[in-house]
Image (cartoon, rainbow, N blue to C red; front, side, top):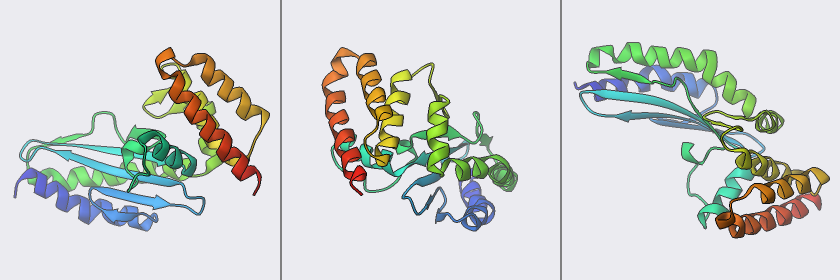
Length: 207
């Protein structure tokens, strides 16, 4: 058995039960969980190589408003929830795992399962609550992305999230801030997205 096959089998034996017990559906390498608000969390064990294997475990949170916006941004609704569509995205560990022997796969899978229990799942549990997700956006922390690097993203992301609460002064402040920060070549796209946010907020405000 090559290292990749060993790791795939170990993920199925060791990690899969941990995630299913936490309410996730799926199987290696991707597991997903949706709550009643329509917000998704994703665990994606990306494996590359056959004999020299690298494994990186990605964590993502895809709130329902962001999922809807991804359809606008992409020009069509996504067919599946993937880690790459997450508003919050991070790795379980920055460096991941490397192995070149199938015999080491059980140990790697056990380490992944342990870190998921101790760190990854508590994080995803917390951020699957919409209020916590808005709070982490306001705190400038989207996992791999920080406010200092992408201030415009954080302003816009908060606007997308709170559009579900209906029209508000805060929403207008955010859209004005996004307009002030946008690069000239992206101004037209921002205007289109802002119109969508306004329409979405009015729809939910009428609920």
